[in-house]
Length: 378
Image 1: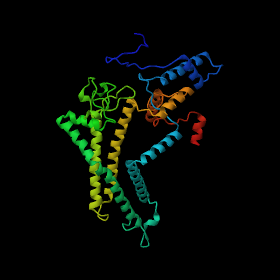
Image 2: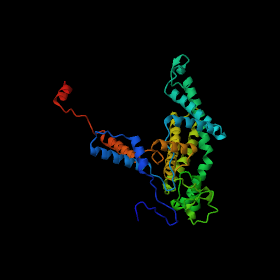
Image 3: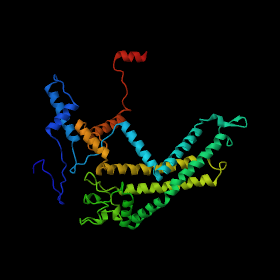
Image 4: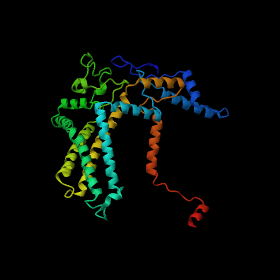
């Protein structure tokens, strides 16, 4: 089979990765990206040309269906686009509630931080005495007020999301204890944004929530979430993400439930005991533990969601399509990955960071010459 011939899968679709690369386009783009001095040695010219051709080949690599990831915009454009999206989100009912909630948490949390750091010494005077730790000082009173307000805000998420968290925990235990595959499929439908079942990467690429009930294609039902309408959308890249490791599902669900239990403990200390009888360590400890549990679950979910998007792709907006076409005419290259970066350069950067971290501490400056040693001794 010739090297450039397409590979045909059993289903009859083209699984090959097309490489769009013409001599004219490459020469034009290479001439815009790099100029070679005339007095450069022949070997240097050949090396520079070969490296630029290889870079162009990587940049112009495309998926079989012609998909290209969105381009990376300049920082100013990203900020403007973020502000527009934030305003549109704010104009929704849930967006308005979430933004007001977040601003209150930031404001009251910032005030509590400043009080704990002693940023308001004028609040330490009590009956003519300067004592910041006096329990009747304005500083300690406002610390209590802030703590109660923040605890109430944390209860909104800790208790408000409890029904959905315990629902997920119930389905997870049904699968872990009884081996109920339907319960696992239900969880896959709930967390369709980042969780993939075993065998889901072998499903037909055109299969999605809009056509799964009418499709005549054969597929394994155990690899599809329940109900079947919660299946993920067809991947824009034409490649489905591999199955997610089940321990990550356990990790996220258990830590979300742990956040709710820690919030119960914190609220018990805050509401059952007044500020005279409550242990001084209780508030800070359980606030910290509850925030850490919630953050760990959120970070893991975000990492897995980004991993899925890096493989399956993300839908392109009209702005993305227009920018890609414009940059192609101008000869501005874009790497066809979610970060729009050279993967080889990223690997090399990561490797250098690891080497620097491992060997950086052991490297010490050496006084090499006699003059340097003499100056050091003097």
